[in-house]
Image 1 (cartoon, rainbow, N blue to C red):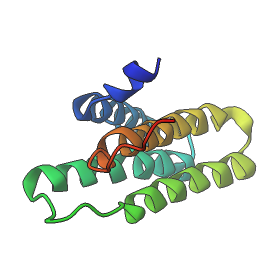
Image 2 (image 1 turned 180 degrees about the vertical axis):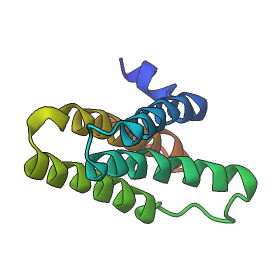
Image 3 (image 1 turned 180 degrees about the horizontal axis):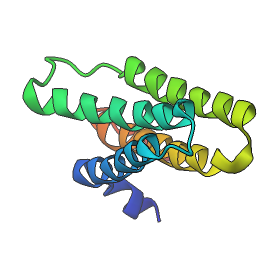
Length: 123
């Protein structure tokens, strides 16, 4: 299982986030769904996609933790939670999808962003 997580690649993350973004856009176009949860899902999916796009276009000279991306994803999840409280539990599945995208982002950071660190000595 750990080896599978270590091979979690950037294209896999991008594809997963594009699927979440497409679902968010679809929900935004649905008149029965309030805008707040749909926009929260779009923010949650688009923040890491924009980060990956920026890395692809112009990589930074040094590795820094992408705090802004993680904060934007948290903001999107909070918007969905507020939407659930305000408009009912029918949109709880959007929160599950957003949290799955957040977990994928955290796995990406864990196994790719921090890969330049020295390995810890084993006992």
